[in-house]
Length: 202
Length: 202
Image (cartoon, rainbow over all chains, first blue to last red; front, side, top):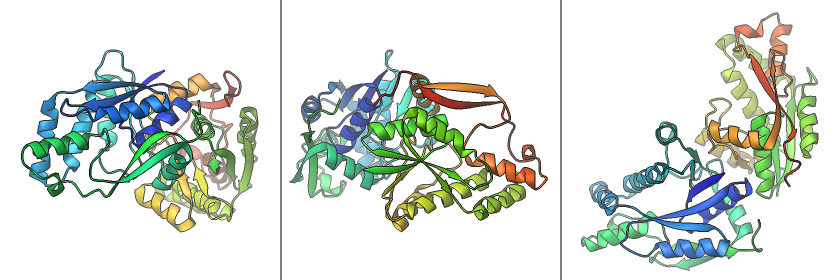
């Protein structure tokens, strides 16, 4: 039972990868990149430390450019992030060999989040199962589990050593002469998963 | 990390118990009963076959009677089932020693289902984590996992060898001279988990 799991190297996508593996799936991690930055390498490094198979999937830069336009028009990144994630899910779901896709969406997330209609539409159009192991977990539960499982590094930094959509989106904004801080809220801290706290649990 | 998991002996609550155990929780199964029937014994038997700790929690019959009145007024059982489940969650959540509660709510369920507001209210009022391992899983995913994990018996029957709220609610309606079929949809088949397909997976 293979599952293709969207992976950023962060706590949520690492915790959901752990749960999927424990549920008996053959977990294949996927990090999406648009070819602007090598920000995918943080996710790849963490995936290797955790012992998961990992693949970088390069998507068309047009998606990121369209997302950037949405950002600028809206003055906030929510619709843009939602747009990128929906396109990314579709790109993987449409692959011939893919039967199951997954991500780290949490109960308390607002974006990216597919509602019931979009979830069923994705599953029906591409004949896939879309699995979200954290959707029924609140932030306290997720915090307790990640603290128990992972060594996490917290840094005070605007620089994102991360592999999520935001990194390249900020970069593209800067390239167009737009300060990302006019669109994204300021981040004081960022966290990164460095490895298992007590060795590989599988 | 103890979790008190609402358990009916059915496929959903068995699958979610499995996932919780795999996530590293110390799983305590709970079956709610109102003292009318010994329908809890189906859940207890299945819990024992699967190797989980199990406890029957007897709740005040007033809850069931109020639910019955809702059934009769509405002509369908949805609000009644929702009402019972909310009261049951609160009864366990309010216990001194309980930090985590859980149930088998699925992505495609309509009742019982706590929305975001009710979920957060439950967690805040009783200082608990409310965990729903199946909330991010669709019916195909759940079917695939349960078929892989469990030996399931399917019977053509109106008689429910089950330990869910419906059994005692139907009984109470019959006691009052009301045919449950005027309120509940007719069930042609019912399924029961009989044990692990490939031995205990822990």
